[in-house]
View 1 (tube, one colour):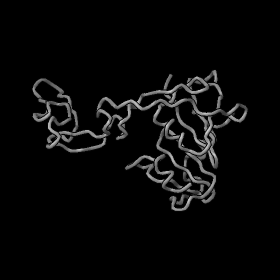
View 2 (view 1 turned 45 degrees about the horizontal axis):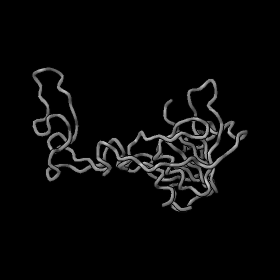
View 3 (view 1 turned 120 degrees about the horizontal axis):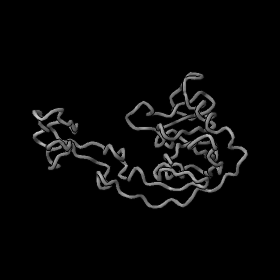
View 4 (view 1 turned 90 degrees about the vertical axis):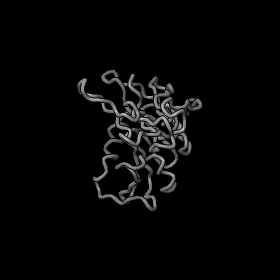
Length: 200
């Protein structure tokens, strides 16, 4: 596995931009899922011991999974297009208000005169092209869900991303009685991953 293989599990343009290594393992996260690869990947950002929060997060969310069977991933349906960008992943923001929708605090204030308060340009030639905020530029409907073997629901786009890992399987551990949900745990050749499910 290379640094480039792991970049897709990071968040472009944000603080979780790069995979990082403590010299033994390499970690990456996008805030919803986290990955640990059991080797120091060349080119990963070097972090100090205990600098990354991911090892503690993995330990917390993987406790108790070892007593349960790991099975193949469920069927992953084709993605549905994001209705905000029609599956393009691109949004055309108004050049006057930069796509910021501000609701007037009182009757005397007015919406943006160019877009009428929608934040979006009606003419793509006179717009600012940005990643769609609803789907993070993926073009995929963000709340398209897949039922996991333990009964929890997971966002299809994150499951499809995890499915790219080699020989990946998922824990069948049921949700504890004292919790609404817990992170789903995955193991793959050379590492492990967790992903937060959708709220029940």
